[in-house]
Image (tube, rainbow, N blue to C red; front, side, top):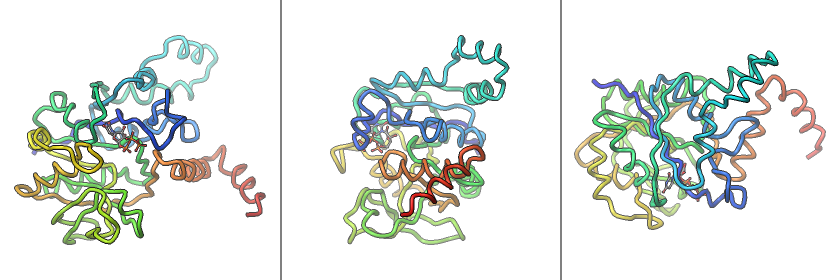
Length: 288
Ligand code: UTP
């Protein structure tokens, strides 16, 4: 069985939910406390033993490349000032993983963004990680999913329970439970109306996929919202291949949504040793 060595990060979207902030700053670069959203998700991949990251970017996303490159003057200044810890933080990503970039010329949808990574992925299984889904977990979410992949040797999709009408913002699976956290997928649908959602299990931005998805993506037309949907292609492949869902352990934050971003900022800051105590006493003083 081939190992999952590569992870694709679709980061070419327009980030319209976060305008005007995302007009000239990529959504993926918005900082949660003091680190860009995308860095949290890249660190999750590194902790899950991913060796190569393929970033799908587009116009106006250059700061992502700059962020993960060497910044010679800055690093030299930190070295001279003896700020070794900050320096190690800066080098954390590029020292531990190979980064490659490919452009999606038009934001035609998540499925299309994955398709443009085809040549870089080649003929091996790969992960897809959405850089605005932050998953705060003891065991990294992708690592939990890799264990499922190793057992079943078929695609695995990360899912979370979403109760109420919010389910219609997601892809939703119908399933048969086969283990405590693992389900066999019977069907899936992108953004169903609330009343028609087949379950409360929503597809979250973590996938382990196989290269036979690429030819299917190639022939997938535009679906919901006029975009080429990853869910539609997976649904097609599901006819000839088993797919599994992994209900991962961890807290998921939607960093691409204003409220989700605020909640994530507060919760992650509260967990920090330097910021947690003063932030906690400030929040208590608010007398809400
Ligand atoms: P989203 O729908 O959350 O991102 O797509 P968006 O389109 O940038 O944001 P809104 O909804 O307009 O606010 C999930 C991920 O897929 C990427 C996005 O960058 C995001 O990380 N994506 C989406 C692409 O790379 N290309 C696309 O054509 C669409």
